[in-house]
Length: 144
Image 1 (tube, rainbow, N blue to C red):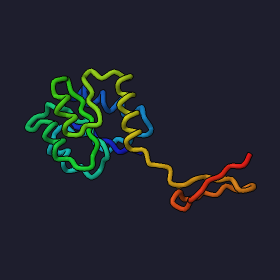
Image 2 (cartoon, rainbow, N blue to C red; image 1 turned 90 degrees about the vertical axis):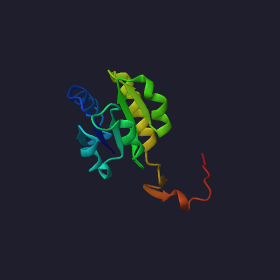
Image 3 (tube, one colour; image 1 turned 90 degrees about the horizontal axis):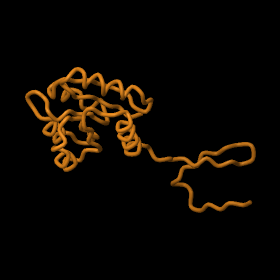
Image 4 (cartoon, helix red, strand yellow; image 1 turned 135 degrees about the vertical axis):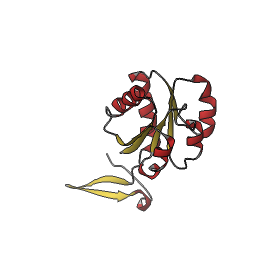
């Protein structure tokens, strides 16, 4: 499960993002914030942040520059900041109003970026299934 937070000062936009996030069981909403100050108190509680670029007191770009180890998705009405957003390391850049289809693509990117690799290999032995660690497998051969 990917823990996500929303940093958006406009109520309708915030509600729209929260509604779209709620459609995905892979995403767990852990915080919704109106200001960068509120947001910064909780950064250890999430993996990904949906951040508006135009915020009161501090830009979302400046907030994102301070984040380490947290995925960033910008959600903004301003297309002109996209290049700067990706220079910062954004996973995605959504332009308001965000369509359901475009949000689906964003979630696919998040799932791909945060998927845990398979660490065990299920192997059938008679009636049993063994779970072998990949680091213990040296050779695989199949018989038909």
